[in-house]
Length: 265
Image 1 (cartoon, helix red, strand yellow):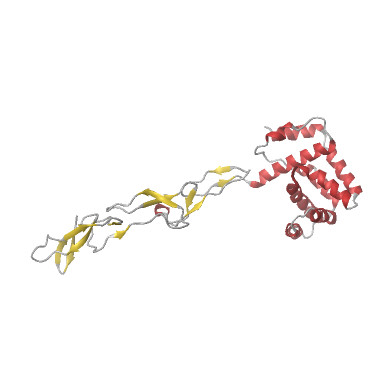
Image 2 (cartoon, rainbow, N blue to C red):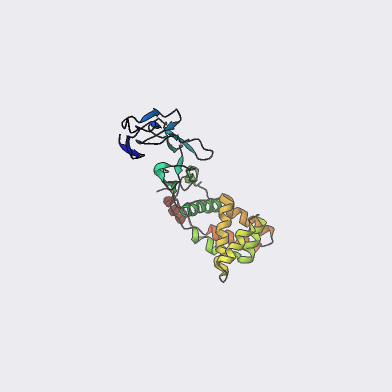
């Protein structure tokens, strides 16, 4: 298995799975004494070591590892990430630490999690716009008492990008920044989110109002328009409430049908 020098004497190395017990002598240069590694210990190369190496444990707390192949006298334990985890060690060939795979929400999985890479999710912004459009459409339907139900809402899946700006900019212009802030505050919206709109658009009142309206509509869900009109009535803004209702109901049946086709390709 190879040779090594000890006190100017050439001795034989111990074999894989063994350790050195006693060096050879000048009288017996081929008589190196070796012994097998004990259970829980190993040596994976021919050696002159007086001790075997301790087998690696895959059960370290929070490491999220499991045994792929058990330790033997000739080979160390091989660990791998548990199911639904991926390696975050610098050397993924000898993984020491794993993290749980990201779980995607409604946006869905773009690239599945592997042993060495986390999940990649689809773009949340497209899903947000799709869900926002559905919310707006159903609110308009309820508000305007359309005779036909929007049956496609009952089978909601991931929807493609649909820009709801044909309604919201007009509504934002009708409301104005101060009224939109009052609506958001009365609804219990986080003041930090409201201030964020002002920081993002310090010199454009219409754009910050539109941004806040979009965020507020997302939080309100399917009853967004109905809730908006009710809050406007509560804060004595009946004129603006009527403008919002008129803007919503101006969406003609042909436009609703076009949006429905986009949401159900």
